[in-house]
Amino acid sequence: MTDTSPSFDPIAEATRLWGEHGWAESAGGMAALTSLMRAHQLALSLVESVLKPLGITFARYEVLMLLVFSQRGTLPMSVIGSRLQVHATSVTNAVDRLERADLVRRLPHPSDRRATLVEITDSGRRLADDATDRLNAEVFSQPGLSPRDARGLVEILTRFRQDAGDF
Amino acid sequence: MTDTSPSFDPIAEATRLWGEHGWAESAGGMAALTSLMRAHQLALSLVESVLKPLGITFARYEVLMLLVFSQRGTLPMSVIGSRLQVHATSVTNAVDRLERADLVRRLPHPSDRRATLVEITDSGRRLADDATDRLNAEVFSQPGLSPRDARGLVEILTRFRQDAGDF
DNA sequence: GTCTTTTAGTTGGACGTCCAACTATTTTAC
DNA sequence: GTAAAATAGTTGGACGTCCAACTAAAAGAC
Image (cartoon, rainbow over all chains, first blue to last red; front, side, top):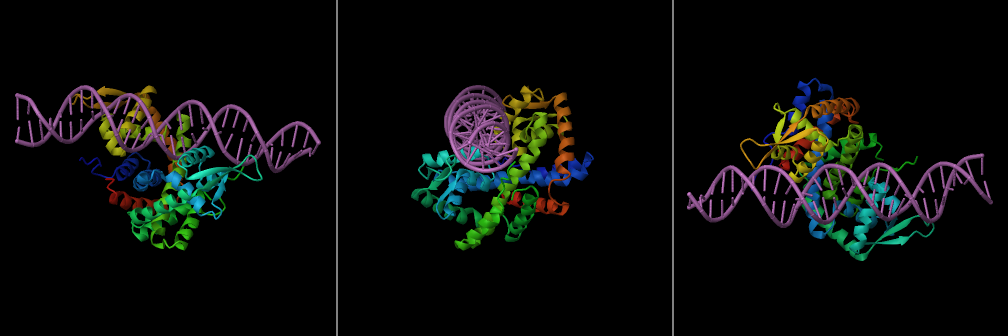
């Protein structure tokens, strides 16, 4: 078993180099965005390691949860895409795989013949519940952030997302 | 032109629902990690939109910058992987594409015949400089975060990354 | 000094994301 | 009312990431 992590913080190092090269003004933004990229990788692999035994990915888990929370248990593909802020093709992809695993079903939209409704199945609901229990227990209740940091992160990123037009 | 963004914050909504379902204890962690995922998408697409005209991606830009900052302009593939915290296959992939574009070159390692050195070319250096100028001007100097938020984000994520063993 | 284990890199395949292009509807404009 | 524009989904392709399996070489164990 080898330690593949560097012995120093690459982001702190990059910030230092940015300063040395006369880019001090953008060093903070560089560090912020780069931190985001790294942290995302870590967070994703944490979450995926919990979901993997259940045979789904985080992308598909998000689709399932959207359906679970949707009362009727159905949503048009387009709504799923706009809620998750991903392209229609990503929704097609996720729904294809969920449907193959019998976790959702495609239904024709009753009033708009262009649209497709996605309906969660009973086993889809069971799997979503199971996944949520595990995620809560193994990841979300101890995300590697103090409650204070978790709150601070959400606040900062909410402003960031709002500024970027995410909602 | 259509507005594809939801009119409410899906993360605030998810937090509310987590509370309603008796998962209040993990709601903060869920919101923090989910925010990270969303913000990452936004940050990445910002950066990639600047790099796209130059014909590279952020992953390849990171490899180039590592080489630019490495004095000799050469690094073993394995070092690139451990600095960027990506798998060897991702390095192979990035270096393949950079090499095809004549931005780097593969050289045999002088003392370890298993290893491969990656060397940046002159045009690789020029492109990296150009990319950095543009990123600094168009993204990093105005990342959609106040300087205070940028600083706070880096601090929080540094603790998060450290906790996860990122460095 | 062998024999075993670890390391470096590659290939092939799975998956998610995006974009471009396309079909089929629906909505808007006039 | 009909022509033009917008919308819903799909397919095919590019790209980055990971994993499993593999070859070659170096390092460790005895």
